[in-house]
Length: 262
Image (cartoon, rainbow, N blue to C red; front, side, top):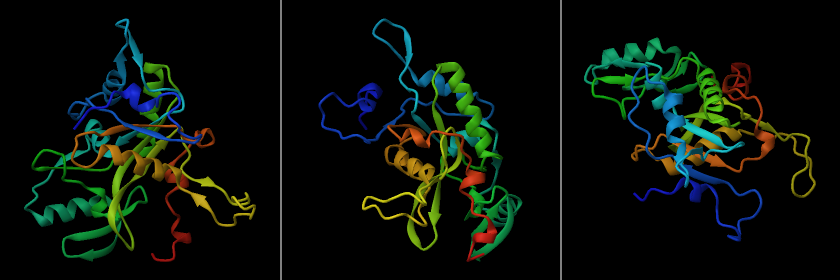
């Protein structure tokens, strides 16, 4: 795979004909293998700094950018890696149940559960991919808090005001295929409420709420992929209105009282 020059990728040449509102999404290459106890923010700060023409160190991430970080490296850094024999279905079941508040559906080895975070997903979000054999990755204990820590640490190290999205791959009810969604956010809205505002024809919107954090996570996954060992991407050009205090747990997780299916 050809590695893009970050500065070129994130800054289209003048006169390229891109209209206002254009987003650019850049994979962040060169992230080393993250292990339990690593200072993830320090690693990210090092990679996000690129040698300038004068030999200096200049961060190519800028104010208003959104840094999307996959759950897997956050879980690794936070020590959320546990031993698990993949050939022992009972051990896997017990682990899933320990990470769940309730089991919603069972089909063979597949369990649809509600996690302690309120996420409804397959097998409590436990993942066996891209980890050492005989281990499993659990979701971060508090992904919003993890995102805030990364944002604050990078702001201190790089002197930039960015947003952070922690993403993970989830399936969707009634739709085939998986996509990345936001499980933790900091410095960006989870949901933008457009109710009471006019659409392009002037009609007042009555029910439109847009989960912009999930859309940013999905966009970033297009350049990270599942098999490229690229766990971080930068999204540039999001609407500044989105850049505010945000929380997945407060804004995106649906309260059971509003759920027609549980």
